[in-house]
Length: 297
Image 1: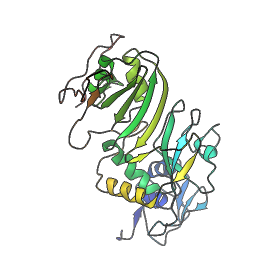
Image 2 (image 1 turned 180 degrees about the vertical axis):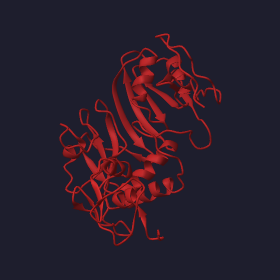
Image 3 (image 1 turned 90 degrees about the horizontal axis):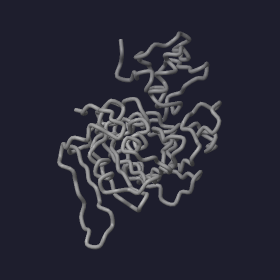
């Protein structure tokens, strides 16, 4: 019989700081986890006196206050891969060289650079990946052609990619070849695919903010510990998350308060304000390649 002190096996492992819940499930499925010497199964609950091992390594429960957990912000350079697999050349763990076992929260493509969080707290990974779909992620994007008002409006209104239509977002024109985009989605290579659909190629992509944390003055390859004030803000932001994480670079869902989108016009004398597509406006169905996408509910 289960007791209130029992925990799900994947949470036990993630709370210990060994890995995220998702990674724990993968280890369990691969038969690398045992409980009291017996192979574990997904969904198994663990009692305080049970012995849990991963690859024969004893997994101890974490301190209740998680005072030993690590939370860092890292400026990932171009060419670094967001994986904990140490055999992968240029993996993010070797690049940082942190003395403690840490793992990234979410992903950032190898050709991209910018802000990413890493931690030893597997439980908060799960919470952020579930709540991140309702929080902003901001990117500075450089493309190979002049950014037009029409391009910005179409990006903001939604673009059909990957058998869906991207949710409305904010787009701000920053220069002739550069724009800033704020997403609450995280489809696989989303920005690059959106640009490609509209006939543009991304030449540089830099993530400058996640939620309320900005990249700041961190140079490529540098990292810093998140402050207690920042962690309090993050914990407060994810406290009420009930959404389910999905596959892809990051989870995605409708932003809180409904869809929001906006475009700032190109800088010109007398230009003021920001143009917003109509709420629920349908994205163009036909792109330069003549392909079609379906609307997302």
